[in-house]
Image 1 (tube, rainbow, N blue to C red):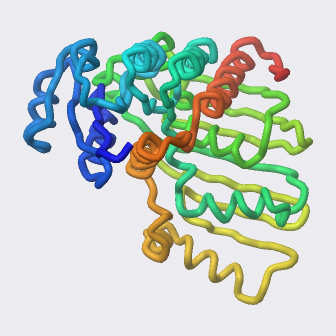
Image 2 (cartoon, rainbow, N blue to C red; image 1 turned 45 degrees about the vertical axis):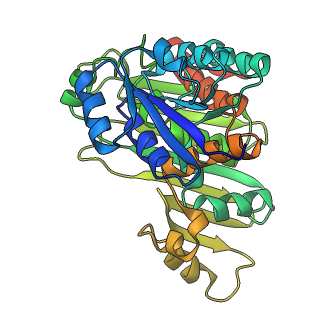
Length: 345
């Protein structure tokens, strides 16, 4: 495709980030946005003059200038709207989680295969500056045999956050609480770094919110490699603390918080290696400044989708890969509800 990619967004909550990223792209034109709230559409049109606004998703799909639609609706609506867009001849970029059940998410994969359209999924934390060296240390074998991982998402959300969102904190539309909504990104990183899961044993509860779903989970994860990990998700850790990733192998140890490496120890480390790594990946934007390809956030994922359409290649994260984190999240919930360990096939 030689012309610019025509981009559209449905859902102007987190979708505003998709909208701004598409508008800034040199390889795309922001064609349209869709939402049920007129005030949000008016604000989007004021920020990006010339952008068409729609209250009806079906009407927007009739626009032949649209090549890609970002699906940024409540989680349980992702599959329905993504499938509808692909059947209308549009490529899709779906917000996390891909949907709230494996069965629903598989409908996106089936539609992708059936229609030949491209389908990408947002898990932008894989593009955090520190992820490339951490994953390389694992996949190259430098860290040695994986032994143990510790993953924690200790965040805070007010009751107002849930009350105003309406769908948040509900099983029907959100599919869960602290784990499915906030920590699913870190679940994705865990399985991406540690490998295929063998079993999950979990506890969960509601500790400081009036919501249907949990605001805390604690899990023991066993991997098919023999490694184990603990995983904690919280939206009741006042005032909002860390997103920790700690991985220990037979030849080294790595600890990180968000995009900041805080520990880098290896048996075969070269002189000053740890100090260099801690300075380079300090979480203050220095890494991205040193290397423009280390950009983070939704912008990188939207740009990847645009380039996938322009250059005819697969998006960075496809449905079958994104489904892995949904399966793990639902296993946590099943284990916590039943009091039993959930064993994967």
